Length: 372
Image (cartoon, rainbow, N blue to C red; front, side, top):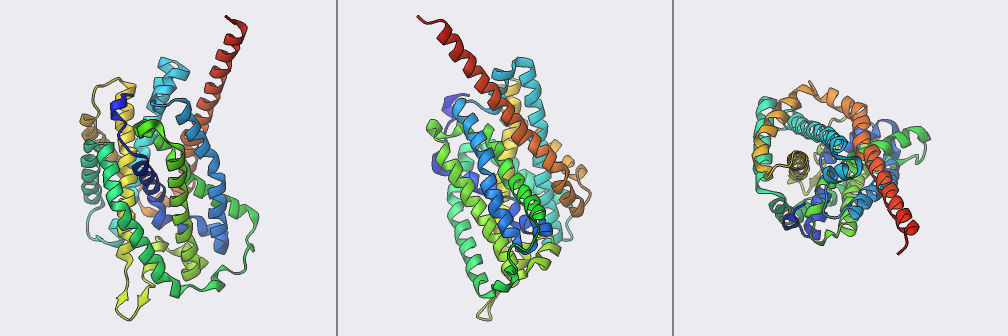
């Protein structure tokens, strides 16, 4: 990795991690993980945050062992040239599928909640145009944009939560811990997969952080994003109740419709959609940038900017192919996507970490057996 590219400050990096963690989960997560855990969904979210420490530790360990390198580069270093490139190509397919999946979620939300008469392909194309523009401007510009927009998002979240406080019904949480253990664990796994495991995309972004200071901003970013999601889940249960949270397509968006203040402030669901659009923009752009950067490094190209348009021409139709409707998207997320994400975001990084440990052990053993 060319060190002149390392231009994101630790603050910008943390903000990008927060936005990526929030992502699509802001509007989808409460409904997705409430199916089994019901009023104990918030417990599943907290459990998911605790379990999520493990993959975060794995990512930081890899980033610390290979400073200045992306996962594509140390795949070749640990596995050899050809096997490493083959694994990198598999990661490319994962990132492209991930990008298409995120784009599909954007299209489903916009076409069902706001622009109901607009063809979903048009929505995909327009949003992808913004992603392509942001990707061409680079990670540094994206980091600065995140730094500018983050305070507005925090203010919108405070307004959202503040107006919901009068609508809270504590009885919606009762009886606490009445749900069986298995549904809570299953819901916690869903929370770990999205958003924690999806943070593996940053294995391609780590080298861009100034002075390779990864630990604190990455942990704080993941923690803040996860706490925001847990608060949204908790408010969904407290205001809507477990049953309505489950049957709503977008519970947090529906949650905003319950806000009434002074007889003149009401139906501020666009606050939620505004937060969601911003976080989804950053999440999709980061994933898309990771795809183009991976191609550049795998095939040793000079630039990656010229790749964004061809990749967009792949992602847009792929978003149409992977899912015919929103119901199928949710089923895909709760079944197939868990397996795919677990393979690329936990299994392969663990293998790489073990190979790195074995290599370090062999070097130390060789050094000890051949003293000067």
